[in-house]
Image (tube, rainbow, N blue to C red; front, side, top):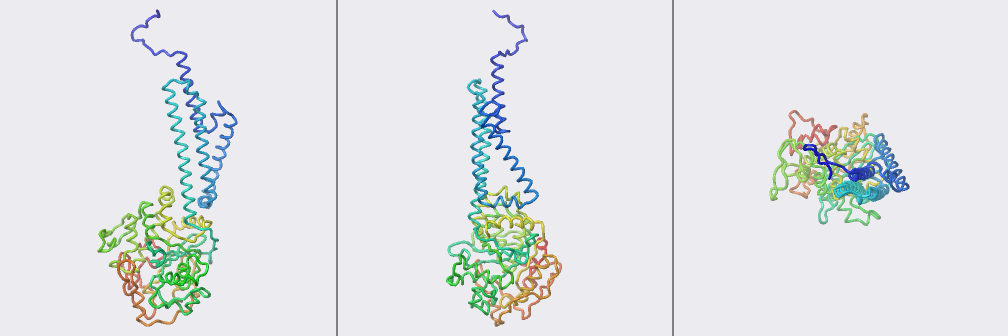
Length: 520
């Protein structure tokens, strides 16, 4: 009979078998952790050394490739933008992540086998199964989720952008026509509610936003264009305006042989004839998709200077956005940009520019990454464009450069421009001056301009501002000065009309400014 230990001296006694079990358990845990830190190292120590060498070399190669990509992206942002917009590379990365997930999961399972779980005690066996399972599913799940995100980006690039040829910059600038319109049965792209040319410096990203009123009449088209052949004396179709070009072109689509978007082509020809700028690309913005985009980035902060109505008084959801600096959701931002009740077209154009500037300034790369899937989904529903996939990285780079700079604006609206009978020479001079100032050079005294069309009767001036509205009511009647005049300098304190700084008679500050942020 073994001796009984004295009271108070009871100690747990570990047999040789217990110590062996603990050693085996630590070994099993070590093999799993080695697989997590250095895939293949467990096989090099205790398993198939050939598999271990392949896995370890693959892992080291991927680490070096990732490190090199990070360094290159830091030194030259174009590498990251190119990688994120090249569909074949995205497909390679997607398949690679899926293969890596499967291979790493296999190494975890093999490391668990090498730990000889059947020789462990029950509690040790359960513990090693839990640790191995957690690490295996965590790593494989993260890699598969990464593959999913890459797939979303690839699908977004394919659905959003085409395979067209890139168009070089014109005089060092890219000119992109941005059009906004409502979606709905028979309405997509038919009558753009807003038209803005984003003229972007090809090197610095310095941007000038040039807005055109939808009710402009009697304007020329570029020589040799389809519309110029139909309207050699300018667009003088009775009862039709700039935003009606798309409708006219769709009704005469046989004139635009081979065109996929005759309405857009006609609108571009009109904008080129008015501004004297050659368009590189176009983008049609669906307002419903814009609302979803704002929600996807968590809203946008805007300076609400006056109560802005949301909806019409007859709508069940009608209410007001109260004054102050407010972070607006998608619906409120949309109505901030488009409301014309108790306002006018030109104050609305000023507010639209403020929204553009705020989105550019506030949507950071970090926000884009953390909300990527929502943004991709919203953007696919928001924009139709002819920008080719091969040019997306260039415009992303320019957009990031533009975030740190002041945005200049010019709106071709009263009192500077009589939209019923515009002085095209003056219009193109103002456009040239705005671009020259943005580039930091002295504008030329005269700019090349197409001859202005014959003056229309005074009654046409009134008709130009009475186009039937697509939302609530007709646009207000605009003044028709016999001689174009420069906008008056706002006096302090500046008036606020329709939520925008300025007035219809003196002009709105956001419609002609060298620093959009300062007047919004």
